[in-house]
Length: 127
Image (tube, rainbow, N blue to C red; front, side):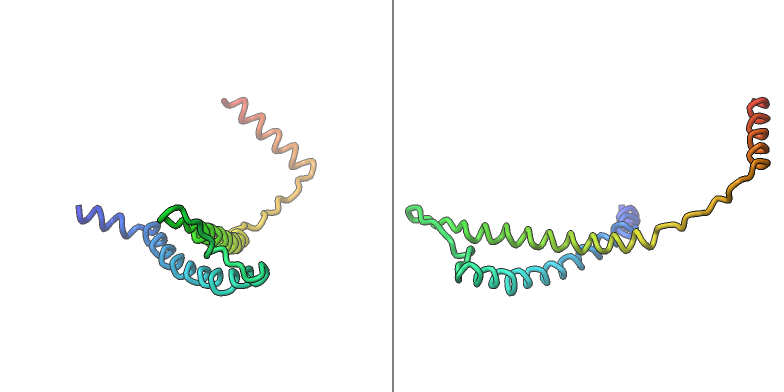
């Protein structure tokens, strides 16, 4: 059982995933700081000092803090969009690296075309 787990854990995909999770967590902190410390205060200034996070509704003894929920949704959308943009940029780099150079096929003259046709006909006859 230990050997099976070790084989599973040491596969390249699992290690790549672990690295991605660690980098994603660090990147998430950066984006969260960007949203909380730069973007949302700027949005608040544009809206005349209104903070969506402070919006709430009182029902009896319960307080529904829908503003905090909306703030979390907005944070998620900004973070998800930022990660999407970063992944898209990296994927474009990878595509450019992996694009094979097009092989130039030399054009055949009439003699070569006829020889290819003869070869194909001979193959058909042998079948």
